[in-house]
Image 1 (tube, helix red, strand yellow):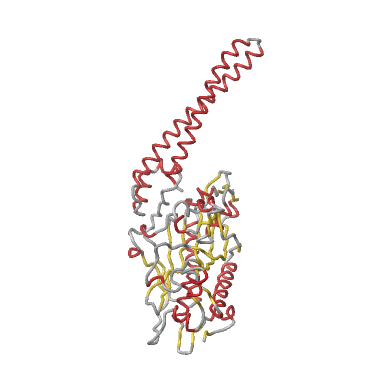
Image 2: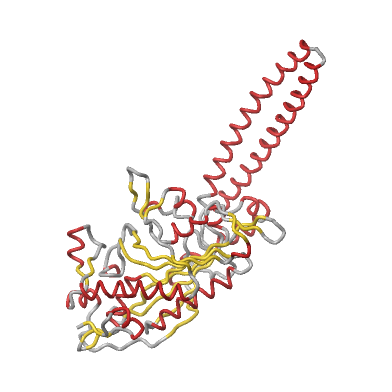
Length: 424
């Protein structure tokens, strides 16, 4: 959530940056917030003045009572009753105005970094890095969903029977490959200094609000109505919320966490050939990395996280490219995002496998996640997160790109984790 002081003092900059994100009606929202904030400050001043007057009269009443001037004290008491009623009405008006401001603020996306390229759709994203040659497959090469059936790795139809479309059942070496990737990703994160946590896979409204999923993405989240809980779309939500309402010591920054969780996304309206097989699921596994950082270091850390994910993809021997997302293709909460895409040789298309984002203070303002600097001043920290990595499309690319006439080869880095070097 944007800070209201920043909006008030930097109105044009906020409008210019929201324009990069193609946020509709930004001018109306910002003007309404500034107007409501002005009203709030006027009400607050009037309330403070009434409280000060009431306190002054209370002292006078005390002095009169000590002097035995009870009748004079009673006259002033009548005035204090009137002031108390006025104070109560002002407090109610203040609470309502603050509620209206908050309702406007939560609808405004994060302002993008000045590094974000202009654009409205994914076609306008900027390719900043590409690694590896695209493999040339033999005639008759199969897409991963056919390979999964041929080698009894994933049963999509059984998943439909048990839960519905988008909930695959992994079998045999397919299940072992999943477990191998999870362990490999966690080991990499631990070696990089990330502290592993195992968080809940359901969150309450406060947690969803804290990281920006609510009220923006409630339609994409599975809701457990009777308990008013949400299945997590990513471990980013519970892990980042560890630091909700926390003041961190400056020397402890950056804080680095990683977590493996299943993730759940409704993906409403998704259909067609681009969502076949593992391309888009309602439930999938992912290892997430999260950092809470000093504002002066967060963009340096973002580049480190991007290189970290790139290093994993290189070890997996997957051709990939890195995109800097344009304003129109960024998430609600992000200030700058890099997407990593791997090449799917059988489908002849790029598949997104990771997003690495800097949210600056957008999440931490909601979370009230702060740190104390050397002068004892409390500041908002910056939050960052990245997929490292999401499994489904990694598995899809591994199966497709490594298929041979004799089976599917396993990348060398995964063999110790899998216990086999080929799927046949």
